[in-house]
Length: 444
Picture 1 (cartoon, one colour):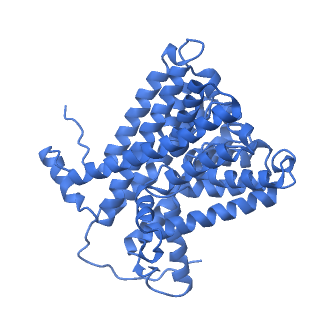
Picture 2 (tube, rainbow, N blue to C red; picture 1 turned 90 degrees about the vertical axis):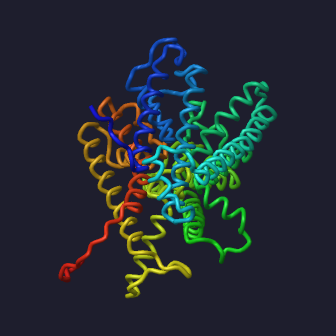
Picture 3 (cartoon, helix red, strand yellow; picture 1 turned 90 degrees about the horizontal axis):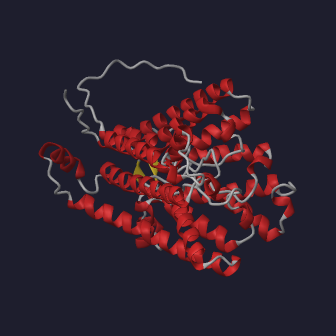
């Protein structure tokens, strides 16, 4: 019996993440992983492991009360593995597509010779890991100090809380050790801003952050990737904050009970989290339906490429916006700044977006047929899973086994799907040596 050959990097990513989910499931099913010292239900273990590895944050049980410290450490470890895996592989794929390192030939050679002489890849991976650990350490110190000084937590407990939440924040996972997520800290800028900044930095992506660090004073020198990622991210954060301020300002169950600075902080935090973080300081179940719709859109878009955020990515949205603008102006080429966008990249953006919309639509229909919940609630859960956002209207635990398995599949596809599909489309090139006759088809 022959062993299957995984020659394409996308296959390696899918296989690696699947293996991590399976190992995580087995670890969480150990009796030592629960507070009751009993083996967890396999659906709960599988769902939680998938949510952790795919850095989502959706849960079926309360993390702090159901899982023991061993289980919590396992969850944080799975989040770290999933986040670093996405950061490193997405960065390598970005460099492959951009042609910066000329790695395609090296990867092909390695597959044939089984050698490990890929110094460029190792250097990039080391930088990504170091960057991630430094960011998490800084966030952990700030959070631990705040928990100890501001809330009287013992030193050991404060450090544990700081490390756990810094890992889940930077990796955009959204697991929290309180039943209400971070609602008790809704007006605490030390907690909220630290978590929000960690989420934003992790979601921007390694290439963008490093380019900003090198040339943040010279925006004209930025690459197209950095320009689109920063521009769209800032726009979405600003628009999201304004939308939540307008729709929830007088809602007594959300912003209505806060003072003006508290409302601004809570609205900004609510705009950051749909990038795929999963924390919440407001009761999402009590939000207005218009706020749910805004979150749906933000979760579906997600964060930056080569980062820990999920969704279709802000780069995909930005590219589509330039394509639409060029078409409306009647231009036969799409230009971004002083660069021309290749036709292949345009097709990739359209393909990924179309497949994402189709998957969300089909999954929403299926979940509507097997659960009694309303369309807005079901759509929210489906997009939260596909966008690996981890936010919920509170119905996740009541979806039944079939619904839980469907969300687990969506989290897995949403985590690796856009990345692997994008890399596969970018690296798979076929040259056609002939052209068929052209025929115009009416559109619209």
